[in-house]
Length: 480
Image 1 (cartoon, one colour):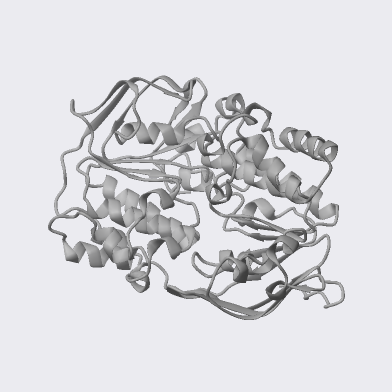
Image 2 (cartoon, rainbow, N blue to C red):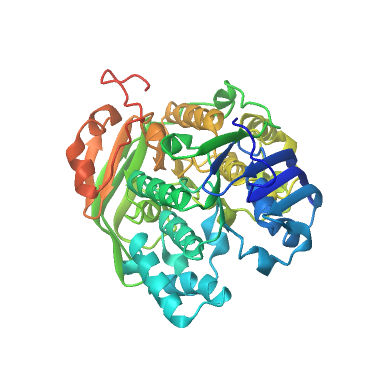
């Protein structure tokens, strides 16, 4: 960690800031942080270490929108956040949430960008100019009339970034901004952030995918300490069914999906054999989430989806865990509507997924990574007959928890079950047995990750890049 800027030069300054949520005894341990104009501070740390809480403190959302126990002081230039109305703080700092859907307020993409500009009191001509510039900068012109809730997770993340950056706040706090972006969009974001820093913006970024940030100017790193234990290495073994299930075969034939008058999937066909981990990769908005919803029976579609000639019984872990968590505690969530629960399996799930200390906590008060693990526990507790579907399972997960996810996926596949995951994390995709690369026209490449990731043509065809730092799996089929 580099030297902390002096009080006189800092644009944002946190002095021994600590916080506890009212229904969750966890939050943020005492932390000090300071950043100057034109500087970027990367806040690292394990899932649940308090990165999102720190970002909320730095922008004034805590204490104005969250009612818990706060100590210490945050200053935005010469203004203390605790004694300043939130509308005034919004002129000094903007935050992009880890879950972008939580900050969508309007009915169209265009209105979402205009909303913040109007709140600044800008003249209509200036608002129009910034709107058009922002739509072009973030490639959002085709979506300007779309409802934000109809966008993919990655498209929502780009919109949230666009709406905040359009306001040009002197301090920009970004919570896991790369988590839902495909590799090309992530590289574009690095370019945006480089321009912002060089223009004098102070950027605080909380991120697990630190590899993208290596070349950014004026970068300093602060790491928060872990409060949770490391996931047990043998945890996956405890999650396996009591006996091997027959290896099943799933057939997807001519599947098409229409959403809001748009064709999202067209005549998609492929087959998957139980016992292999399959990763689905593609650009933001290409239809990966829609595909998983169709496979799980949650999305009306044309065509046929069968496992051994019958409708599939697959458990789906949503990309946005907020959409499938609604009980008052983690315990109630995992056991919800499980007729005769296997309490030994329940205890193993808590331990293996690092959730034991949160058993009595409302799941929606957890970090995004922790919520994803609760959602995974609910699916595994129900023991779906044919396997599981994981939509962006790496969201909010640190390296140790991603390793745990790989062990669980491989353990389930070893029993003959289907394991299909979508991901923008190409390092995670490299651990799969098979990689399906999706383009607008369907599957453009299919095979072992070692082969697919070494063929540049299909990636260039769909406009995706493979960053230099991604470790390609060896051609002999071993782990990366």
